[in-house]
Picture (cartoon, rainbow, N blue to C red):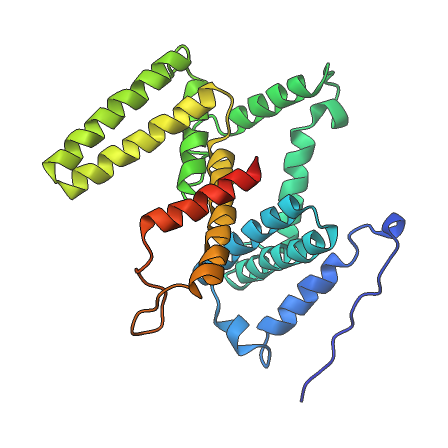
Length: 281
């Protein structure tokens, strides 16, 4: 027999103190208990990995959209993953939801000595310096790159690695060296392509991409954001191409299985692409 669950009453912002968090923990415990949700009970840490990534990315999308209602919803989905993993930690007798919260509170207090201690700071730059110094002391036995998550998107991971090693002097003295490295890697990629060795082409292409990330950093450019903007522009322009194909050719030619296929010339498609570019000016 199904049982209802009490939904917390909405509270004015001035009265919100995070007091509904225990309700989410209790709800998750119910879902994972005997007679709870079969799907939830089958999950483990690794099976939730993809959902954590997806929900975090959806939060970022909502931030970029600037829609507070959408952001609120996506933050709730991400909070669910935190609570879900906390309860799986309890099930494994490793940690629980309060350990998670207590741990981050302890860390924030420790890393804000200018708020919770006697340290004085002149501004946000000094706050960041102190934060990094405290963090370095906490992780003094770690390698320089140990704090960069392996599961970050590859471009962003390369950027963070580049930043980390530059702090210990493993870097070009200026942007010229980074630019020369791009030329060198491009030449090596051309050689690999000419040689026809797919594995070497893959290696050299990766080296070229990494050198481009370094070049971006030297010029104060966020490589991840730069590529995302280009991808967004490409998507917008290609949407115009598709609209024109539908208007002028009644849509894409179709293969036997009904999927879009070859048939329209590149010259025609390039013409529509140039139209899209012209509309941006």
